Image 1 (cartoon, chains in turn yellow, cyan):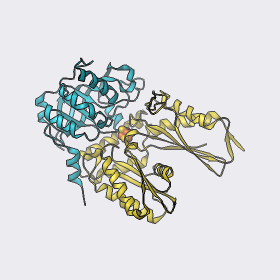
Image 2 (cartoon, rainbow over the protein chains, first blue to last red; image 1 turned 90 degrees about the horizontal axis):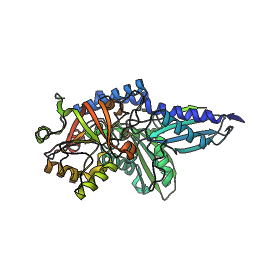
Image 3 (cartoon, rainbow over the protein chains, first blue to last red; image 1 turned 90 degrees about the vertical axis):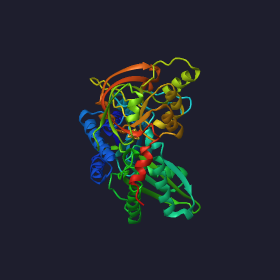
Image 4 (cartoon, chains in turn cyan, purple; image 1 turned 60 degrees about the vertical axis):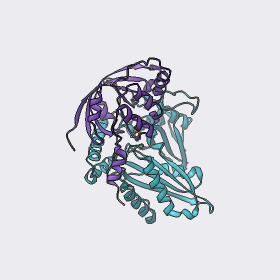
Length: 279
Length: 185
Ligand code: SF4
């Protein structure tokens, strides 16, 4: 069995925390740029220009795109034929502490939801592990800000609601969120599974790059339709009115129980951050 | 877009009454950061009629909790946070003389009513444009509640901070108007 040093995990996670927060993905950057051409509102145009300038400054100076450097959400795809020398969860936690401290990232985590104090190193992270074939470990760090996370929703719909019900739920959620998630947003949608899994699907959907469609043409069409409908709501950049409310919509689905029809909407802001590495 | 209006703090009632929703503004002068934790403390003092650690008359509060500064920087990235969390405390602060607020997101009806009554203005800053906004901040000093860390009250000296008037003293609301204007059926 292949072995990976404990420290390799620590260093990789620390680096990904910094890179995710400093460097806006080219896909998002280009989507904002394309949005500028379609934006009709002068205020909206001004805001999109500011976002591009902001991303340039963050990249050149290696400082965070946004001051809310998020909850560190980690997706692990762990090969069955590789092991880390030591506790991998511990190594990831150490990596997050290192990245957030060395990288001058904001520490936003309270040790207990009710009685807590700031942990001062942005730990613990939230870690999702999947065991996959092979002898590699893929680590994705997706820092998630509070403003957009707070506007997300899960709904236990009825099977009779169908896909039309899901579309309405997505649009209502986005309109209600208005300016809070810092539009232009990216929308992750989960359909199927059960109560907790559907939320996970919506979150996982946000790891896709802008323009990456669901491989099933049916859902790819729904993604396109929702994108257009959201951009017709008029919410616009920062909710101040305009054409560009959303940069993309990603749907992830899973089989469901005959009695249930869960749906979830996880909203991400224009600071749609995720960086991966394979070790 | 029309030429931005240049404003200096502290704001007078006359300054406030000039502003209409959709105006773009470049703000220069001293402003104060405060998030909900600091608001709660200010509110409790004001309710009891006790003196606040800073005089809010004519001042502007910026809803922000900056990231740490890298060496050589006066401040870390410092974009606006969601204003709504401060809504329960805001009417009281407007009553004692606060003239302006900077943040992101819609305000409650109570806040909008109080803005009309006490003549105040609410500016939207670009959420997530934190690295860019930090460039407009020239000096920083903690003036109260240091124990709150990122949420302490800081005095910021800003120069040409780009803002948009989201709610004016006449009851105008750009969040509502803007969305209506660009909605398509
Ligand atoms: S919603 Fe996103 S862009 Fe807006 S403040 Fe939060 S993390 Fe930053």
